[in-house]
Image (cartoon, helix red, strand yellow):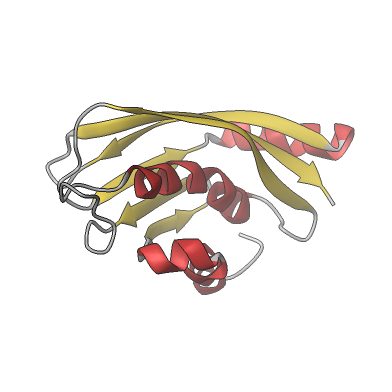
Length: 147
């Protein structure tokens, strides 16, 4: 990590005002692995399940957080190019998402961004409720860019 874990946690949970209002928590912040939790409390919809926007937020954020834990943020920054979410069942509890990049993928992304100024990568993720049931699946294309 280019920054201390506590700083990355603060950026993840508090830097974006919208995310801060949701109460999202970063449970794991490691190079190549992040786990985020979106609480149900405060993010309920009209039928007391998790609001779709909260689910989208916890699905989209891991790509940027992975970049902070896996690359030197003084040299690179992430953007999201495309993101989609497929809802499978209502989420009636907190929701977690685990996102991972292999060492080989981290190396590829870093080398490509250094050489060409940018590198795309894809995350296909599963959002799970407290029982471990998949409530939604996401597909997102991110890009790491050189500063």
